[in-house]
Amino acid sequence: MEDLEESEIQRLVAALDTRSTSEEEAAWAKLKPLGSDVVDHLADFYPKAKTWQGRASLVFHSIRYARQSEAAFQLGLAALADKSTVVRYRACGLCAYSQRQDALPGLRLLVSHKDTRTAEDAAAAIDAIEYQNHHLFVDRTHSGRSFWVVNESDRQQV
Image 1 (tube, rainbow, N blue to C red):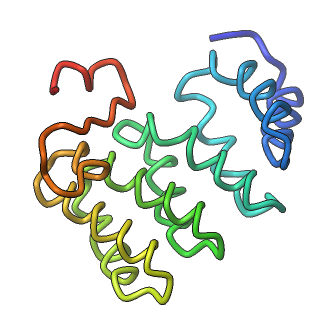
Image 2: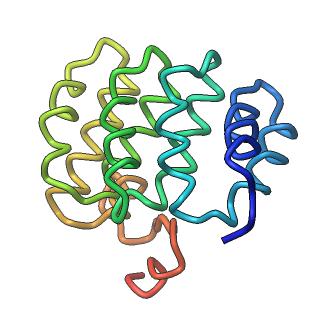
């Protein structure tokens, strides 16, 4: 783990809350070496994030840890109720990748969401969890030709 002071970690996490892709990428490049240790910081900052881009970033960067970090999973569940379609999409993806049955009640609430994209994303996440195959979040027709590699170990399942 990289040696970053707590105050620097908090500053970098807050820097993810930006509309600037380059600023977000620069902050994440410094946070990424923290590995799963960063997730608690991302989850703690989520309620304070002011931009949908920032909230989407927090959820996106937590997806790879959804199977090992309770904080990442809880962030995904919380983000299912976000006002942004993009954030809800990321949350559905996080839940799909987690493969956890306890995400199903929250996802089922979204299947009748007024935003059809959100309803479709929730249905795809449910499908992925029920089949225990996270690739189905992106392979919505079950073609077997679309894969979602989040972590290197996902390549072995392809």
